[in-house]
Image (cartoon, helix red, strand yellow):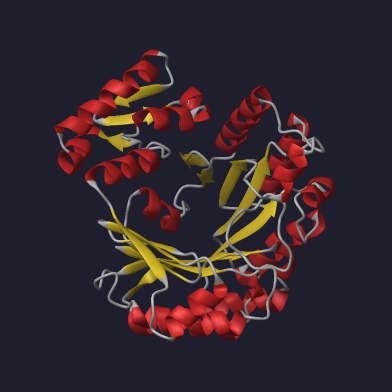
Length: 375
């Protein structure tokens, strides 16, 4: 099993909370697409003929691409890789890009899962986030996607927004579930360095939500999603049965994946690679057959840390038997010893051969995971 991630690093405007690599321009789109197409050919052996089960267009803003550009990328993948017939092909999109014709064309070229970046159904909050769309466009995007035949739709929401109350968050959740979506990704707002929101926080223009409110918002998220039949299969991801993100799950399960495009990461089980986060360096590196990525060989401790970091965020948790088999008795014992306090404090629990977080533990997952890291 394997996955392919395609990073489209272009945006028309930068969201106030985002620190992902992106360029606020679309002048170089064709040049970058041509470079990605060449990279897919150059690295066709990276996955060692493993069947590709997932393809993911992320960004940036993939929905700035033309249908012809998307089709060229997909055809290059089909030519160079063994893609399964039932592969999950996800496309991230901004609501205001999803016109009726564009949606029908996306469906026609083989996109079978949409991830729509809504973030909020409150126009005032959308302005704070510097989003291009409004609440009406968010609703219309989902409805038009359903009319176009999409039956696997995910939306993104953010909670803990500046000036957001618990009631307002409940309203956002109500509106999300009223749209008959199959998947929800919901993230607590973080203030990343060098973002507009971070600068506004430093200047006291806005204040982060207090810890108690963030806890209440997450508990409400768990409660409301459960009522609607959604499974909390990862700390920030919720789906109806059969609609979990196969691509993201491959990350959490440490399945090999190839990432193409500027700043994209790849993983093959023994090493991690990341492309340069600069348009010109990336395109020149690709087109001139020179270096365009860096690589790190993962030590035993590195691989253990990744297994714990990713696995403990999921519903399944981490497998104690797999810990010993893959990383040895010493690291297994280290993990068991360091999680004991959290089990005693009812923030984690053992279920057979699995270690899992309960609701209280999920609220402090970063703290628990940090204690289990081998540094």
